[in-house]
Length: 378
Image 1 (cartoon, rainbow, N blue to C red):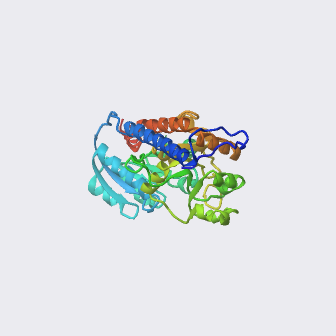
Image 2 (image 1 turned 60 degrees about the vertical axis):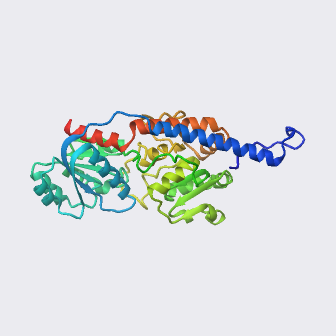
Image 3 (image 1 turned 90 degrees about the vertical axis):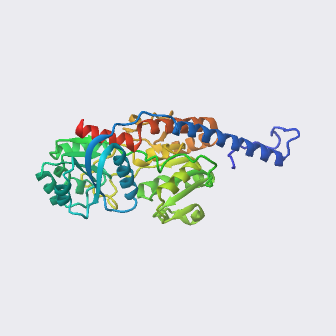
């Protein structure tokens, strides 16, 4: 893999006796192979390390899937699969089904709804009328508060992945509001154990929201020169798109397995959050801001890859900046850190492996679903 090197004039270039260009290339390849092998070996040890298991609760849960399809279906799969390992019985439904009727038939201990924005509130009124506990785990806070503010009050428990949304729902009259971000579903997001067929210097995977376009545009030439590849929709919004169309895979939603392999095959993955005040895609007229990391933060970290993420005020609750993750506040700071870590392999690997360890210890869906059940049932 090509590496960036400081420019040195021929007059002052170091003399490497007995090492022709072919041999130098072989030496660099051997070093790359060693570095990659070390990273994969250490990651494998971390992934397979024994960790205490969570209790299996004697509970029957009626799980109501989002019904939205991709990209929500992988979240449904993560929650549902994890629920089945932590409870004795799970009944599966979705927002198109008569939830009140199903609750009457099965008498679950809990009706758990993911997202809930397409579920008729009359169904939840029917559930609560039967005295059955209910909870919703909101997936997109704070970007759709115009919708969620009208449904949150129909649940006994509201779980939100955004810290700033807790007070918002409490002010709306919700008695039990809990901060519970998503995590990494390790069936999907884990380091590849062999040399990845995808080999990238820098990756960005995600939609071209306008704040991302405006952030990347001033430094896109530098990023591309350093090896950036992009996957996602709307990137033809980028003014420089035509110059780099061969490096931007446009209009593709990548599934979790392909995304995870791309993360694993990248030296650096950039994570830039969407804006809370973009009216072209949001329904957030109250302008509730965001403090919490997005789900991608945990998924990238679960792949033993160095992550550069724009700084959010609650990020340090989950990863220590400069130790387990790297942050930036401006395009120039991002570029400075990109160039540093592309030329400092050991430092890059140390942070990536620390992030992997922290994620598998604290930020999996098993951690989150166990916390949700403990919050409701003790």
